[in-house]
Amino acid sequence: MQAMKIVFGSLIGVAIVGGMVAVLILGFVLLFVTGFEFGDEEMAFSNAPSQIAEEEIPEQFIPIYKEAGEEYDVPWLLLASIHRVETVFSSIEMVSPVNAQGHMQMMPCSWLGWDYPNCEGLGGTDIPEAIKTDPEKIEDYGGFGVDANGNGKASPWEEEDAIFAAANHLASYIDGNKGLREALFAYNHAHWYVEDVMHYYQLYNDGFAAKDGGIVEVYGDKAWVVPHTKNLTSGYGHRTMNGEQEFHGGIDVAGGNDRGQPIVAFKDGKVVVSQGNTGGFGNLVIIQHGDDMLTFYAHLMEQGVPVGTEVKAGQMIGKMGTSGNSTGVHLHFEVHVKKEKGGFQRVDPMPYVKAFLGS
Image 1: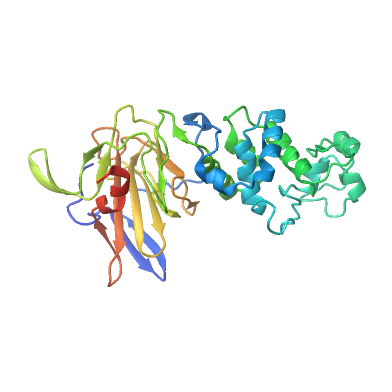
Image 2: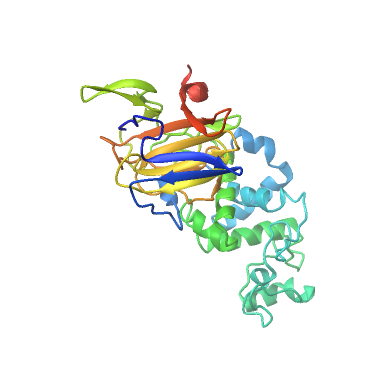
């Protein structure tokens, strides 16, 4: 990356205003993303449980997830991830503010079928229980409810029925590991929900991998930002480029066969910039981590996750590219920390990532 002569040069300024991050972009037009999605074919999932999964997923549910997953050809760890997001494995309130019900929080009309006469809008607020749980009525109205335990009643309040019904719903949209996000969005029409479930699905998979076999490493609250390689091609500080001394404000990572490889968030945070431009950083994502840190991800192949997205450590936020002032495909990664008197300053990322690099 061509380094900025001054912090942010003439391109970017960042300040805290009333507790919010204000980012000023000068000299080019901002193109903010209105939607973002990665093809699941870019990722590989083992569907073998990680250590996190073994520690967190309650044992009593695992046989049900596996049986439902086998029945409907749905990854069982995805069912566990939905259960975690929806009701924390049935440990919290099981009726949502919009009347989604049961262990896996399915809307009554999705359970019974949207052809039921009362199902308009959200609908289903006064469906008689005897109708909603009748397997024959569910078949008549085209619902996803399932009588998995064979007791003659398909109920979202029964664990087996709820999990099998979720698998039945997902099966209409996915093929193996493809179309996961489309299926999750159909299950709950919210992008934040899709990313929350995918976050747990990644954590619960042993060796969640990028397409070239890179594994997302998460240590504590941090993740290594380029799963498929740890090869640093340029460090932080002064360097010589084209015969001239300049300051390089971050680290560059590239390992070969990089184009389109996933880039993931360093820590939990919120996306405050997601833009494309013809110079400087190129396609850029900036994530705010609390009030005291920003991380920059530059030269992306295309625009990254949209502004306002809440991301988790290790969650995919963009793809490697060579946009902006770049001579080859790589990630330029920066860390900015809050100054005592306000604002942010760039610092050497190495102390923050050394645990991943063995240094």
